[in-house]
Structures are given as C-alpha cells and as structure tokens.
Image (cartoon, rainbow, N blue to C red; front, side, top):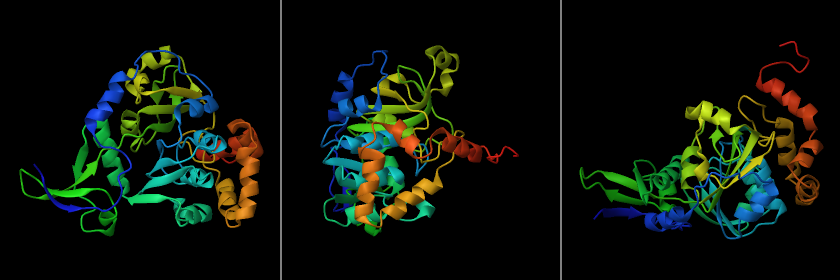
Length: 332
C-alpha cells in the first residue's frame, strides 16, 4: 500500500483501470485485412460524440490536419481532448467547439507564432472543464497505458500549482521513502496520427522525431492513421525494423498526401507560415472567423479542396523547396 502524501484537485476524464482497458484490447481484432478508407469514413466510424480524443505529432509538426478538419466538419461534440504538445490541431478543434473537457499541458499557443485568439476565447468561456498537466506528465500517462499498467511514477510537478490542479497523486516510495508523482494511465477512445508511409494493413513508418506517438498508438483503443503515401506490404516486409507502428494497433488507413498542411512534415514540406498567420489574424474578429471556417472547412468537400483553396500543388512545391533548403527558383 502506497502512502499518499498529496493529491491534485483536478478531474480525471479517463478511467485508469488497466484491467478494464485490457478487456477492450483483448476483444480487438488483429486480423491482417485492408483498412483503407477515406478520412470522412474513418471519422464517421471511429469518432463518436463523448469520446476521449488524442492527436499525434508535435506542435505543428506531422499533425493529422485532415482528421481535425473532418471532426469539425462532421460537427462532433462533447469530446474530451488530450492537450499534449498541441498547437494548430487544438486551434482547429477549438474552432469547432468539439470538446468540452480538456487535459491541459500545451494549448492555445502556436509556439513562436503567438496565441490563438479564438482558442483563448473558447477556453475562457466556461464551456470547457479542464485538468492541468505538463507535457512530460501527459507522456507518462500514455507510457503507463502502453505498458498496460494503471499509473507511471515520475519526479516532476511536485510543489507546483500545476500539480494542485492536476489529478495526480504524490506517494512515498515503498523502497526508499522518497516522494514520487503517480500519473494515471490514459487510454484515449480514439486517436489520429499522421505518418510518412503505411501499407493497407496499417504498418507505419515515421521519419524524424516520434515524441509520444509510439506510446499513443499502443494506448489508443481506436487508431486512425493518415499517411503521405501508401506503399506495398512487400516494401514493409523488406525492412521490418522501419515499422514503428504495427498493423494490429490500427483501425483505419487514409492516404492523405500533404496531410499535415499547414503544419510541417519533416523531410517532405515546410509549414505554411503565411496561412497559419492568416488563421491567427482572422480569429481576432469572431464574425470574420466564422466566414473563414465556412469557406475553408464547412463548405469544402474534403481536405483536397482545402489544399486547392490554399494554393494547391504550386504552394506545396514552394513549401517542399523550403524544407529541402532550395530556393523556389531552383538556385539552391
């Protein structure tokens, strides 16, 4: 029995019971079948009102923008959201007011770009119940779930106001008597992760940093993958060590070229800073922002049409050139 030294006062939005989670995963199929579908189909099948939602990537890097758009377009409601390293994804979801509960680590800000005026208005509106964590604390929660245990011990957050407003506990270590923070496991009902390559079954390759996405994939009850390109299973089998997310964790595979736009996709294309700045500027006026959302999300049929409105392949090629440090005129 642990001796509890201190407890946060924040609400816990997800049951950390490892045995209950295990019951769910025991019944989840591991059949190697094609999971290819459209983003619209994936969101319609796997994102339900009231679910706990998590989004992969880091900041504006490798985010599944198309899924975030579709959740807003389908007007999903009453979700809980994992606000872990979230920037433009949070901005999109806040625009649709799709969540009413939020585990807060990093939200509202778009890093050096500034704060999202609309996301700030939404979080200050009283419509969202929140619980505070650190980014590392949220990563620990996912790591606990990926390991199949109900908590993960760590040493940060003690003595801070963040701890006071969290749902963590401080306990005495039964071996040393030292104090540790226990982070409750987090098993999202549904998550979306954007990757560089995947086959039809859901075996995925990621280039560059993965942050907490490997743990997120293993912790998620349902997982939607969007990918820059589909590749043959034979290619996956030719280099199995490059597969970071295995097929049996995945429920949907959606081929979405440029699917992280306007975010950055490492080794593929740079972030569209002009378009992100446009989001921040139009958000200052709620009426102008409503018209912006109608044009770019609600009245678009899919993410491809959104890309066309933002400059299409011509703009993507410019961003590719920036990512590869080549001038647009080709001089290098």
